[in-house]
Each structure stands twice: as C-alpha cells, then as structure tokens.
Amino acid sequence: MPGKFLRGGKSNLLCGDKKFGYRHILDGHRTEWERAAFPVRRNWRDVADFSIATILGDPDKVTYSTRAKTYCFSRVIYLVDKNTGRTVSTSIPRVAVAESTKRIITAFPSKEQCS
Image (cartoon, rainbow, N blue to C red; front, side, top):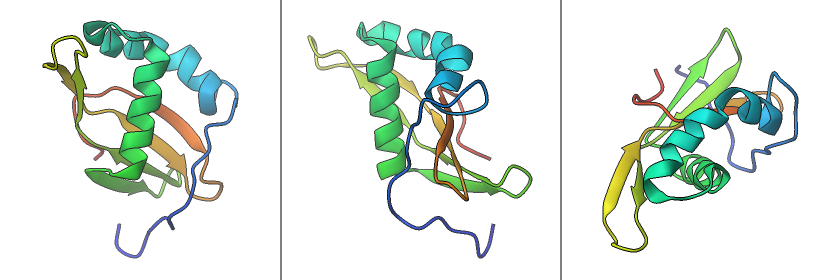
C-alpha cells in the first residue's frame, strides 16, 4: 500500500495467547512447521525460528492489510540436508507483524508469497 511502511527495528515473538505470538503458532501452526521440518530432520522450532529470522531480515515481499493493520512478510526458504548439502525442500513461510506494536502475530509455512 503506498505510503505505508514499518520502520526498521525489532519484532518480538512474545508468549501471547491463542490470537498471537508463540502460543498461537504452537496451537495453530505447529503441525505445518513439523511437516516443513521433516525433510531436513530438524525440530519444528528450529525451522520456524530460522524462517522467521530470515524472512524479517530479508523478505522477498511485504504487504500491508488495512483491515487487520498488519504487515505480511514472506520469502522463499531453502531447507538443506546438513549431511548431504543438498536442498531437500523449499517453502514460502509468511510472518505477520502488528503495525502498532511490531509484535509477531503469526508465522506459518505457505506455498505463496504474501498477497
């Protein structure tokens, strides 16, 4: 959206509840992250943490929702098998960040960039 931007800085992943933060991701998206982590035999949290940090640090796409007052960050993530060095999986996780608080609302694997 023209004129909308989020200043650089930190976005915090708070414990939250069923509506935002770590507890929301745990309750609502853990299975998706487990599926994403399976090909590289990693813990879902490792893949989620890596994805969130990478996306927020260098997104491919950022969009703004006027209805939700959130920013959606996304990028292609390549998951590499550390034993073979081969890329075994790709996904395009999305991370939603609240405009006013900069809190991470949610993060989940997807097949498409933010829209």
